[in-house]
Length: 78
Image (cartoon, rainbow, N blue to C red; front, side):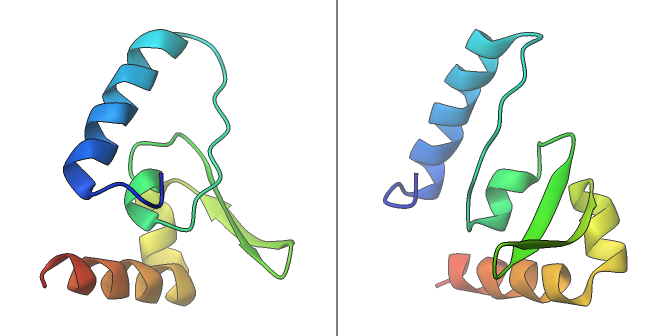
């Protein structure tokens, strides 16, 4: 989904959510915005899990995740 604009990405995710119902969905993304709705997020660096939790938990406890989120949001403003 990296080539999609934010609106199209949100529409695609809504359609996926309708289809998966109670199944497990694994999403691999370098976009923090994709992680906001996920039940569990794993933060990987060089292929190693360095932290995990919900989006909100990671914003509170992970400096790196928070910085990535801030950087991505600033890019959305332009």
